[in-house]
Image 1 (cartoon, rainbow, N blue to C red):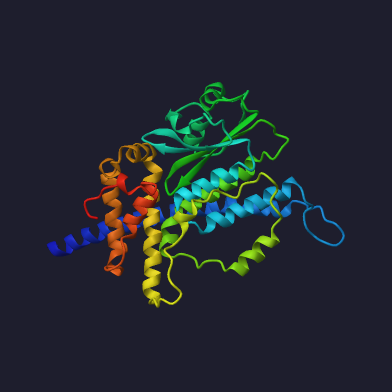
Image 2 (tube, one colour; image 1 turned 90 degrees about the horizontal axis):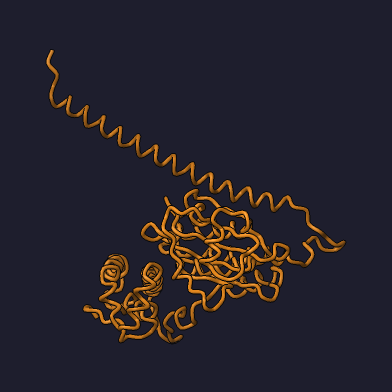
Length: 365
């Protein structure tokens, strides 16, 4: 009996579709399992913190004031800040500053072109320039090994592998202990947080720094969703209640860097001016998305931006990145704001050109 060619072709096609769906299902399961593992690690840390005994007095069940409660206050403040942020530059800046509450020095390295490149630092000597520190991967020092293992590493500077070379690159006296914590976003390590201390009896806490790095990585991963579905702003009353419930921060602790006020402010609107709520929401979304796009250009092109500001040729140097981001902005924001201002161009001038319009000449202005 002959077989209908059409039936045979349909069976092969169905088999191919089934194989594709099986592969997709397997990848989804692997992704979910990985997410569960990461969530489980955070849950374990939280539960361990819950089980730790608290020193209480007879009238108030609360930790007695001290370095531990101050550290927990810094950690909670950092978690609140990155929880709502949709700007990766701000998140990384908050991470670095907050890590400084638990370490003598901290520095961020971004993964670029198979290398670890210094981005910014906290607590180092004024003459130290982190952008001059470049490590080709793979590398046997602490940073390279943490990147290769995709895991946090803590070690004594005296006993660490190739510690002298790393200490020499970072300058200053050799620290007592150093650590490196990778930031895993989606499917790879995108940055590493380095921290060290000269006195382990102080506020040094590699566990807290590791939690911060994990929270920052999860926040970076959530940026697309936060940009698309922003949370409502916290009311002043709720903010006051929340802050009053926290332990007063100790002198010298950091709550994370903030950009200059002019960069954070939304364009002012007169109270008497009537604006369609949908238009107002579209404007806010467009501004937020423009900030996200430009901050990404800023993060990965520090050297080019510095030179472009100096030579007044930012667009020529970053044409490919700018045009790609502009197309994304147009697809998402422009259809809703056809007659409105170009928030993407405004953000380019404000952030990329640092307010200097002469440094950025675009052909579509």
